[in-house]
Every structure is written in structure tokens, then in C-alpha cells.
Image (cartoon, rainbow, N blue to C red):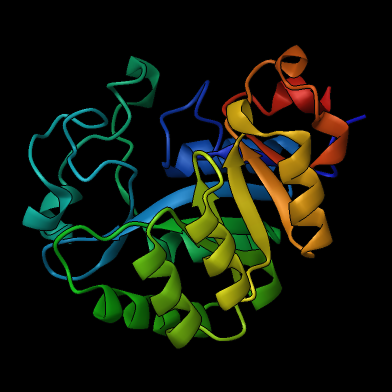
Length: 237
């Protein structure tokens, strides 16, 4: 039995350039109800959708996201590195993503990434954009590996669900889950144990697991609430 939610990881990152509009649209075309994306600020404080703090891997540019303005980033190609078919794909802003998601009633798990910017300022900006978005709060899950970011989200983004990201569940993760009244614990599927599942369920938390690309590689598929996949079509066909 499959989990009730299959989350497209960075859109459909196995077959499309991750975190781009075409990748998110592919998830919509598959009929997915949720995607996971990464959001971080540019030099001129615009929130954009990109996983790495640098653009070297996923564009034809080089250097740090927070050393480019949005206008400069929009000149770069974020698709051709993956496949020449996607030449001309540009970086997406959070505003553009929220509009697309609202249009299709798509849930967004937004992983918040902050490197050199002030965390509180970024979180407050995120809150303002979410509040102005046509996407309803119930369709948004905010997550981070950083406990500092999670605590700031808890302080500044009341009304939005929070997910604690963790490679291996730690005692500090458990404390923060409780402290912020988290909605979910988003765990690496490789390290999940039955005890983790039991403890988290008893605590009232949903369990979302990343990043699973082979159906037969995870023994607890029927015990978790959601899985993230680069190849979500493998889990819905």
C-alpha cells in the first residue's frame, strides 16, 4: 500500500530540470497534489526557487545565488544543463511559483534556505509573500534542516504548517518538533526505524520521507504519510 501523498521532489526532478516551471508543471500534469521546492534570497532580496546556494550545477552561470540580482539571474539558462530540450528555462521566483500552484490547487512543501542573509528578515519577507498569495495556507508546508530557521518560521509565520527536516532523528529534532508544534517530521527514508515511526505517530506528527526513487527500496511505505520522489510516476502508476 502506498502513502496517501506522493510529493514531486523539486517538481519531477528525475526527468525535468529541478525547481523550474517546466518541472513543477510536469508534476501538475501527473496529477500530483504536492511538490517540494527550495527557496532562498537573491542579492536584491527576491525569493527564488533553487536548491544549491550556488548556480554552477543547475545553470550556465557560476557563483553564489546571493551575489546575483534577480535581473541577472533571469538572463541565465536553468534548463539546458539537464537536457537541450529545456534550453531557455529561467529561474522561477517564489511569486511565480505561488501563482502557478494556486492556479492548479497544488500543495507546496517549501524548504527555506538562508546562507548569508539575516534569517529573520528572509522569514518575514516569506510570510508577507505567502499572505498575499492566492494559495491557501493549508496548501503550504514550510520546512528546513536548520532549527534556527524553523524557530523563526514558528515566530513569524503563524498559521502555516511546519516540517522539521532531518537526516537522522536526533534528540534536538524531537525537542524542536514539540517546541514549534510541528505538523510533520521529514526524514531520510534510509534511516527510518519502526521506533521512529511509533514515537512520531504517538507525538501526533505526520511522517514525510525523502527521497525515494525505487518502489521496492523502502519497507515502511504503508506506515508513513508521504514520500518524496524524483520519479513520482513510479509510485502512481
